[in-house]
Amino acid sequence: MVCLRVPRGSWMAALKVMLMALSPPLAQARDTPWHFLVQRKSECHFSNGTERVRYLERYIYNGQEDVRFDSDVGAPPPGSSHFLHQLIQECHFSNGTERVQYLYRFFYNGQEDVRFDSNVGEFSAVTELGRPIAEHWNSQEGLLEEKRGYVVTLCRHNYVEFERFLVHRQTEPTVTLYPAKTQRLQHHNLLVCSVNGFYPGHIEVHWLRNGQEEEAGVVSTGLIRRNGGTFQTLVMLETVPRSGEVYTCQVRHPSSTSPVTVEWRAQSGSAQSKVLSGAGGFVLGLLFLGAGLLIYFRAQKGHSGLQPTGNAL
Picture 1 (cartoon, rainbow, N blue to C red):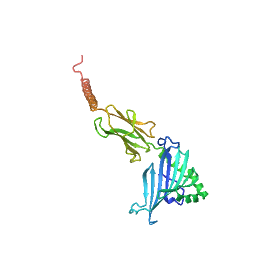
Picture 2: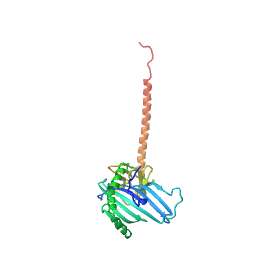
Picture 3: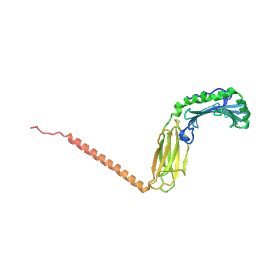
Picture 4: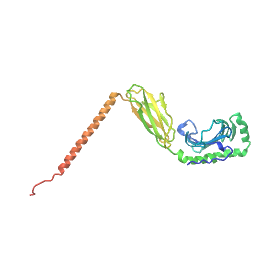
C-alpha cells in the first residue's frame, strides 16, 4: 500500500499529487534524466453549483491508471459538469534526490492560472485571471515558507517511500519475431516484433535490415498494460523481403545492460524446402540409428543370459 503524506490546506478537496523522476534512456540529451512518474489525483466535479458533486481519487503510475475511487459508483451518472477545480502538486527528481523541484499549480476548468515553483521561490501568474491571486499569496510570507519547505517535507519524504518498490523494480522483456503472413518472397509482408512482460514501461524497439536501421514502414501498437502490472507492445515493419536478407528486432530496456536481438532470415521456397528436407532426413536418420541401437542392445542382453549345459569334466 502506498501512502502519500500531503500537507493540509484550503484546496485539499481538489488535490493531484505527482511524483516524478527522469529516466536516462528517455532523455539522454538532458541533464536531468527522469526515473518514474507516480500520480495521485483528487478531483471535485460540480453541477449546478453544489447541487451535484462528484469526487474522484485516482492512482496512476507511468500514465496508467491502476485504482480509482468514485463517489458515484452505484449511483446514476451525474448531469453535465459546469466547472472543475484542481490543485496539482508535482515533485520532479533528477538523479535520485540530488536535484528536486516542487511545483504547486492551480487550475480552473483545465486552465492553469497560478503556480508556485521552488526554483523561483514565489507564486507566478500564468494568466491575467491569476495575477491578483499570485500577488495575494506572495504577500503571505508564512505561506511562501511553507511551500519552499515542501521540497523536503513532501518530495524527498515520498521519494523514499516509492523508491523501494517502483524505481528498483525491473522485469526483462520476452521478444519474438515472425511474419504476419506466410507469403512468397518479393511480396509485401508485415514482420511483427512482439515484446512482452517488461517493466518499467520505457522501452526502445528498433528494426534492422542487414544491419542497417529501418525507419520507414514501422508502426507500433504503443504500450499495452497486462495483468500483473507489466507491459507489452507490438512493433511491425512493412517490407518486401528478398532472399538472403536478415531482419533484426533490437530491444533496449532498463532491465538489461545490452540490447536483446532476435533475427528473421528471408529464404526462398526452394531454400526452405532444402532446409526442411535436410531436417527431415536428419530426423529419419536418428530414428533408424535409435532402432538399430535398440536391436543391438537387446541381442547382446539375450546372449549374456545363455548358460552352458552338460556335465563338468
